[in-house]
Length: 391
Image (cartoon, rainbow, N blue to C red):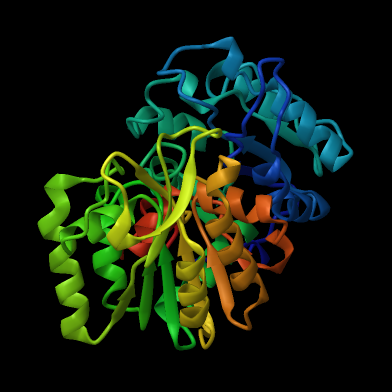
């Protein structure tokens, strides 16, 4: 892939695909601007090199209709404050309004196009929609790693109509850390996989078993693995249709000499509520009408020992229902361990990154990926359509 430093940018109209699908409250205020701030180095570089910058992104799921609550006006205003210069918002992303706004740009100026998903053709990767987007620019830059697993018009189709294309600094950084952590890691490589469902991470588990030295499995998905080994897990969340698959994965790991570590104790509760009655129990002693909602302290000690000699750690998914204080300790403890390790540590997924941020350890993690689905697809061994389109 070409990068920005390979391009002659002065005086050129540069269409930059970003992912500014940021959370907003009911008052239309942005509550977390991480996705905007991570793209600032790319935008500043373009502006400093006298490009005419045209930013495009999606927001929410307006289903191909113009829905005012998904307008990018608050995002354009926020970006204007961060950059310290005006970021006008075009009334549309294609058509006369977009063409006029893009044509009026001077060197070192920036424009934001209105929500791409106000048009159904965006998600359909429509050739004509792609052509109209491409017609706005001389150069295309993809800096939307979090959207690069989607074969949409602004990610894939547009590249067929623009001669010059490159990866932005964020996309470049994401791929570099992926290669360092999964493609060509320093060993031992330990994967920490958690979250709610085995089904959502089945292909990632299978692919990672071919790459890791050790794997820790926690969160609600661990219940399916424990039940597949004959343990009673009470009323815990379990995917009964995947019990055989879980057992097969554990057998496959044994055959390959890969050690998989499951919880040895849990924090069980009589119901899923912040004021539930809780107790620490071993995995053999989970009461029939109770549910496992976090890993217990013995599991934390065990997992800490697993991570002690790691040179590379890849983490996707929390160890419990960390959004409720009684069930956050396991995830927080692991976050502190990973942060204090001497390993290259890479986390991905919204829940994982939210947990790391909550723990106060974000500054001590080597890299927090901005892409949930895209990060998971890389863990599955897939080639992202948005990356392939740049090659």
